[in-house]
Image 1: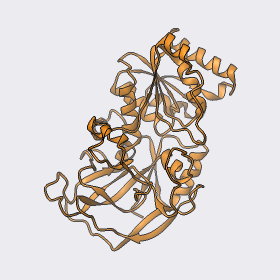
Image 2: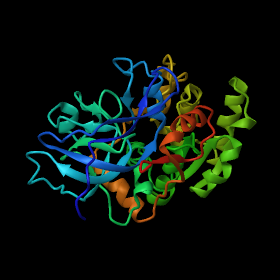
Image 3: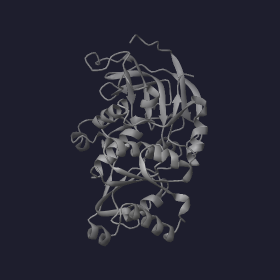
Image 4: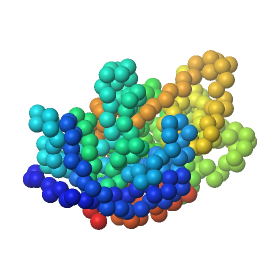
Length: 368
């Protein structure tokens, strides 16, 4: 591909009032890449629930409140526009299509990095949190850390894979489930959940059960769920949980499921999750609950040891997970159900997300 014209200024979406849902389009200076960096002309970016958590300061585990004027976003796809010093011999060249992920860069030397868990890097930079993210037309990224996008995969299709896709792929790999096993996905019709269903059913051979609200039933089934459970049919109390657990176990013929991958930010989903599991089943923590942490209700030692249950955390995925996820997408194993919106609709998208009204993912077209 040819060269990319780099303007002196470009459009960016900023969090103009951190702590609440509010974004604003501003014109900002286009940076020049430093040593080891590339400048990416972004054309598309996914919108993730994590962006809303950062914008609204609703994640207590983050070390500081989000700065006013922060450029959010971490699922960006675009074309390398220019190279910084020291990148001449890298695998990236001007015109290449690449992606920027949740982890903007990792050190490569800490204990997590050395075992391939760069998403847990102790000195990682997070895209969209104290590092300018992908809700803008041009962004800097380390040349060694951008993700190559397969030629056959459209940019709008690729964007949500860089976080949503790689996150659930990594989580399903950690679940311990084997082909033919039952796996439950709470939040099955959401941005993460609908991808987990496809990867689990079509890529890994699992039998998938989706749990979500009734209006998402068709999407959930289209994505590979054999069975769907409508949360509207269950009361939000102990009796409702008991009935939900009974229904999950009835689907499996009695013992329960091999794994539960929680793809929602709901504390209730975590409280219920262990009860779905069979002997030596695994609960994988993916969705990050907002507000004060609530313990996983049934995680008492007696219940855990009697069934030899496991609780596993899964933070995004590493660079290899990202490549394998994008390869699945390029082969058509997994397809994001998404809608494309212009930049000026981002606040509205977050408002819909907050009300649980989104089905699948939203991708912003950054060309406007």
